[in-house]
Amino acid sequence: MSHPSHAQPSISSVFTALVRRDVTLAWGQGGASLLALGFFLIAVSLFPFGVGPEPQILARIAPGIIWVVALLASVVSLDRLYQADYEDGSLDDLVLSPMGLVGIAGAKVLAHWLSTTLPLAVAAPALAVLLNFPDEGYWVLVGSLLIGTPALSLIGSIGASLTVAVRRGGVLMFLLILPLYVPTLIFGVGAVDAAVMMGDPLPHLALLAATTLIALVVSLAASAAALKLALE
Amino acid sequence: MHRFANPAQFNRLADAVMPWAMIATVLLFGAGLYYALIGSPPDYQQGESVRVMYVHVPAAWMGMFIYVVIAVASFVALVWRHPLALLAGKAAAPIGATFTALALITGMLWGKPMWGTYWVWDGRLTSVLVQFFLYLGYMALWKAMDDEEKAGNAASILALVGVVNIPIIKFSVDWWSTLHQPASVMRLDGPTIDGTMLVPLFLMAAAYQVYFIVVFIWRMKLEVNNRKLSVMRGSGMEN
Image 1 (spheres, rainbow over the protein chains, first blue to last red):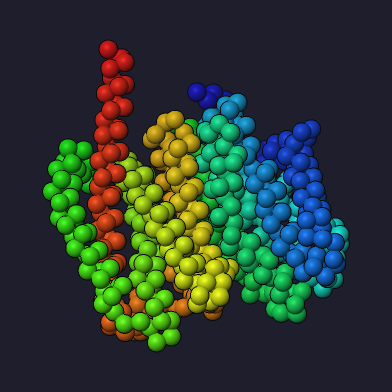
Image 2 (image 1 turned 180 degrees about the horizontal axis):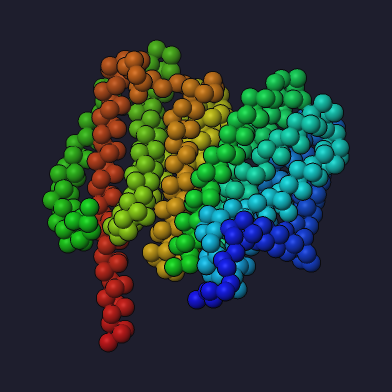
């Protein structure tokens, strides 16, 4: 099909183009990024109403609230990760590009991280202030989110690709992804708790990084396999 | 490998195994329950409550074992496109979910008098709960798509991803020191519990195992026949 005078685009140029396109779409009108940020903000601010405004209680549970809501915000923004491209047929076009399904999944995940879950990590300190979060924990809170949010996008990609052909797969995706988020949540919150309680956050951060790396290996392969299945 | 892909061959094998598995189930459950409830001494610390263990521990083993069965079946189904392997995962999943739920519930009932609480969020309990959720997700994905084969393949990928959880369950009691007791049977230096308690434990484990085989074969035959029916309906509509 390809015309001899047109050279195949290089893998890296397709990859960057796809990442740029997805980030632009996510930040554009009605994009997922602002919605996820809004969800993050509102859901976190519900907790003081739910558990009461006592500063000590809020400070104690702030790491857990922020981490749990961050991973919920991540899933909320995931259900169109592949589905929009699957439904309008652009996924079929992308498959013809030289980078293959693993590359597509990688670009999509990277774009989702840059546009949606990374901003959550940046916004987290502002919300921590509202929750009376202790000063000594801020760096570890942001650091744990920086290390852990790629895992959220990666693991989320597994659920998004498995449910790509499912109509109204959103709730199902929650059921598939949330159990797999548990290790990320445990080590992420563990690091912040350790920092706040004068412990050593480093072992937790190391385990969190390990979780992210395992997610990198497993998720791209699983997502590619799931997409291949959906496109058959 | 594809020798067993022939449903007729599978049915022959299943019919040959079935009566023996049923007899073994009845005998092993009879002996296991006798030793678990009557023929074994109460624990010096736990008293009669130790008898919950004979239901609880083998159920937890089965929950893990069946997950591994599903994972192996999923792998075979994805790599060799083996149709019966796909159905094997589907047939095994509800049994595994039930055993996992049984382990969780009996553990809670035992925990209340022994630990003073039904539930603690420690590594073992949490990872078994996650395994239960993975079973639910696997079964939900099977039901989510009209195309049986696509649904099954998607569920198989999920099952393989979830295998990560199995070593976490096994070693959770060693990695985190928590309320749940460390491994006392499956350890390298031999079991640390008394022989009088190992007898009912292993009898019950064997009973669960053959019970699984019986129900699994039933469900496999059901799935194979369902598949046959839908093929017949499909070809009938074309004519």
